Image (cartoon, rainbow over all chains, first blue to last red; front, side, top):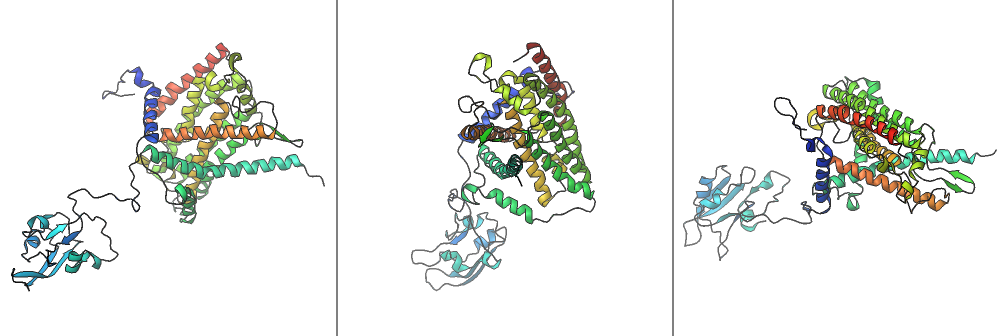
Length: 153
Length: 347
């Protein structure tokens, strides 16, 4: 039964007899009960693949000689709105570049996964992977150092 | 000393039925959660035990081990009494429901009914309304405004709907000519107009069936008439202050009420234990008796499914809609049905 704003009742017999509308609703839920596919993903057993472009755990890339691509230009640390990237630059041991990161640390507890570091990087050295289940039992584990970022473990 | 075996059978029956319906509660809880999940395109509990079957057990253990907290501002006696009343009343209703055909084993008569009372249906109405007291007292003794509002709503709802329920039952009594439950089932075992269609009251009394069904939902405090609980507006309604096993008693009482109401609807409208071709009237063999209990159980199961299905389909009625439906639609409809039954002399 629909009540209008002025308190008078709309006279619609079809709606006033609840039973027909109820029957329609019951058929709808029955359809869902029997026919509609279940949406639940049984998480630990089956995992959804993150969408392309998903911004998850960070990773530092290596070049074909296994050296980090990063040249410690501080572009990512500057672009970072959460100020979670801490780089300590050093003299590069290789002749093709001046600097390399002696230390490269990302504080995942501060990180907001905006992906600005990825966009800012001129050498395509940092990347946000599609790994979404980042779990740790201590705060310290969330501070990713260079080895963790380069090797993923 | 001579043992009165008939008495032993009677006591055993009462014990078996009581524990039988207690066993049904976890099954109902599991069914509710599974059906609700499937209606909402989910999977429901499936981690505890195979297919999640041990989930109700886990729930029960949790309820037992939670702190049984009694707030300092409550009326202690009524606060403790209320959940018991909400639980016992629906359990008592089951005592007069005949759930099978009479069996005769070695001369001993076993009637699958705890107490064959000649005022059966009146007893049911009386005890069923007693269940409302559990809710009202629970709401009042909690000394909490949400609980009080819940209890208030429960009392208003009970009043409005029990009249329509009673009147719907009157037309059933008119067709059966008796208030004994066995007689009400008895008249439904005959063929309708000389055919093999059973004269179930759902066919001869469709209006009474609809009225009784609506009031049964109100009586069990289930959606669409769960205003006494009204989680979205009253937190938990009458059971806001309850925790641990006291809350579980209300919870179990609700499912017990669903079970007994389903059994009652089966007895009054769906021919009880009778199904043409499966159970025979007057056959007192063990097989016929077991088949009749099985038929009754299946019917009750289907109605329980209907109760759950409805709950996950319909939204809650607004309070004024509830009152309007009770007093302006169901009550006149039930009265009209009595007159109609009297004029047509159905049966």
